[in-house]
Length: 233
Image (cartoon, rainbow, N blue to C red; front, side):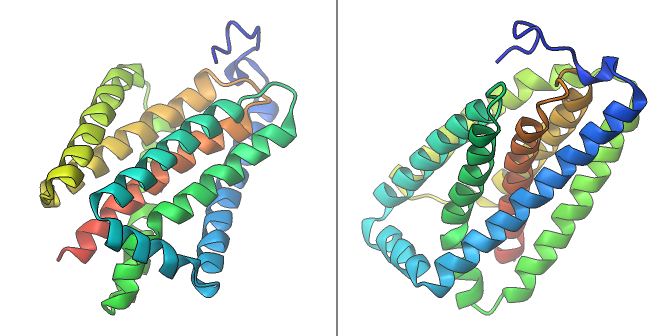
């Protein structure tokens, strides 16, 4: 959705008090999405659903991965669009929790591998590194005077190329390796920079849930590939 077309005033044009309140709500909802992800993940593991998902992926091979990646992409697009539904908080929150649930599903195989190989500490270490990286990028986005909109086409085309490589790797059974993971961490970082600056410059006051959805997706992408790097050591 174009906020200009929706005739919504960007929060940057509002008072300092309104901008501060908006940003607090954005990061509160981002924290809520992370908590929901952890809650969904816990339920998947304690109920045994995680084992079912993991066994399905192992037995079906590449087809299972493509199915999960496809479902994840569809849910992500629907969630992102629904999160910006004007005047409908129920749809916005459904999008937030829907994306958290989708992320929990896609992380099952990676976490099963980590826990199954005794690399539990790597999960928490990757989470800490991701958090530090996210915080540092957020500070840069808020303090820089440079317009970061030039990152948008880089992120768009980088994502398309990455999806193509993932599909090819799944179909032809080859490992993308550490270089790909490092590149994806960089792409997720660029997305965090772009979206964080966009939050203040473009988003209207009501769109704090949509802003949180965008940041959450990039945050989890960064976490996935940082964790992958730790597990591949």
